[in-house]
Image (cartoon, rainbow, N blue to C red; front, top):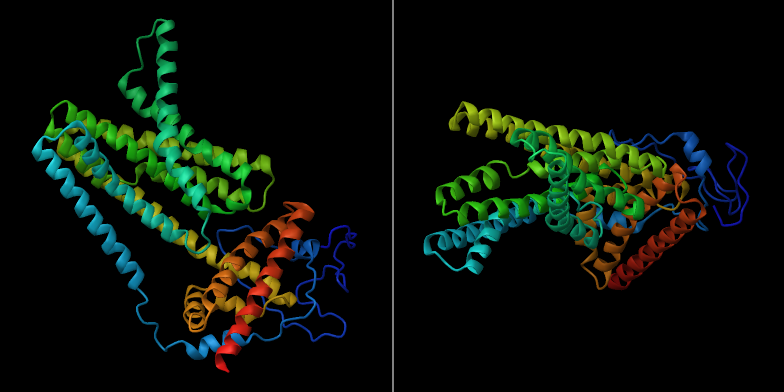
Amino acid sequence: MMHGQSQPAHGQPMMHGQPMMPGQPMPGRPPVQARVYAQPRFAPTVTQEMRVRAGMQAPQQVVTETPWTGAVRKAQPETAPDSTGNIIRLVAAVLVLGILLVGLGGLALLGGLSFGARLFALIGLSAIPLVGIISYVLWLDRWKPQPKLILGICLLWGAVAAVILTLGFSLVGDIALYLVGINGVPDVIGAVIQAPILEESTKTVLLLVIVLAARRYFEGPLDGLVYGALIGAGFAFTENILYLGQSWNDGQLDALKWTFLLRCIGSPLLHTTFSTCAGVSIGFAARKWPWWSLILMWLPGLVLGMVLHGFWNASMSLFSLIGPLIQIIGLIVISVILSAAWVTLGLVLRRSERIHTQNMLGDYANSGWLTHAEVDMLGTWKGRKNGRQWAKSFPGGKDEMKTMIRTSGKLSTTRMRVLAGIGGDQERKIERAELQQFADARDRLLAASKRTVR
């Protein structure tokens, strides 16, 4: 809606520069063929009433055909070559880096090096699971990448701030108990109750800060999984260094070996899984609900993370009483179950995010801003890849295609916020600016392709 324009009566589309229903023809213009797009399972339902209430300003010129989509289809091969090449290269790079780090750590263990070299080795050993987690999380985040600054803040918060806060609150608690005559917390209570409460609270409080301060970049459960996973991975990285360093300083090389195998190899995704719970629960509310609901939705995910954390610590303590073999088997079984659940959740939410993008872009196609062919191209992995390959065949085309892909992701976020009534008139201004940005990139892309053909 244009700034300063009056709101239409409920359910009434508006014409001549006013908001209109998706698919509603403008006087003197050809009608737009409307299409119903599938709604993802893990996203808030968008009703027709929401679309009527939000409305949409019609474009000056309805887009009825888009030559670039047809050109992409003609240019693409029958089978996409090297479709798994990037994944294979990524896995190979991770494996090579892991082997190098293990080799450096082994040399340091055998050579009795100085403190600096030992610290480097500990960092290398602890970084092995961290590299794998970051690689998977960035792969999940490829569809609609979040700002690298926020991703870095999440990682550093988990690795530094959350660890310091946990140790600080734990120390304050011990002092308070000492003042009332209690000499510390029993180990079992500390592991099963105190540690989960303190660690999950200090880790995931950053998620609240992000969603309240930068909600545009925390737009759904996949964003919450990405942020929460990086926080947990950072926390586990520092914690692994502390545990490995303690075993090394005590001269217990066997203990160091088993600590590395149990924590870095046998259960690398635990903290990642625990902190993901709060991120996903906040993400479900971030797309549609008011700001105060985001705080409330932090609690169920926080509690679930605490329960899983406490269950893990309790299980390990119980299994250790039975015997080391049972402890190892129990660790592997529980770790595999939790890790598989986390990996699967990421895949499901990633697919849901793609469908959600198509659903939101469909509103623009039904109103004439885009064509349905463009939604099909920009709303699928294959379409985006083929579009980039076609566009790079002429000067400047690749950059324009990247702009269109990036802007289409922004538009899906903006459209959901408009439908949910978040942001008011400012959000509608952002929507119009992004639509213009997309249209300009499309015009430049077509102009460049025509110059190349001539």
